[in-house]
Amino acid sequence: TLIQAAQRGDLEAFNLLTLRYQNLLFSIALRLLNDEDAAADAVQDALISAFRRFNTFRGDSLRSWLARVVINACYDELRRKRRQYSVPLDQLNTEGDEIETSYWLIDPQADPELQFESSELEIAIQRSLDKLPAVYRLTLVLVDIQGLSYEEAASAVGVPVGTIKSRLARARLQMQESLQMAGELLPASYRIELPLSV
Figure (cartoon, rainbow, N blue to C red):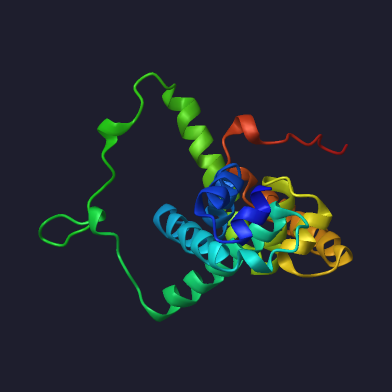
């Protein structure tokens, strides 16, 4: 089988096994790190690490095993970030001053109002996610955003299923409260109008 071949060190078999999970792994890393370059690096590091340690894979859920390796790589990246502060070079001009994003790259076919509202909503959601404690954010990303089952998320994080359920409930509640507080900042099409009490 592919798993046995990969466990014997067959890189092609490993690549075939992990190819279908790369978008999932990148998405998890991006939600945890909030930086595309760092997320890509974390996924690459995780896949290298997973290949080297693939003989330890017991044959359970490959998806949750790979998710756990990526989560650990993200935590390593966050620890590195705390030790050093970096600015992406493409955000600076030749004098070292910060430059704005190139607006000529924006899709001219997109409706500007919808694009603005969508970006406002994304910002509000990302800010609410960023406010969550790391364990709640991770649980919410794995279950609600990436669609892992409770069991897969528990395996990926290394905690009991009950812990995943309680963390998820708390994460959802905190997200709801945070988004309600940001409600007036959201575009009108995303607000919920509550009836006034008489």
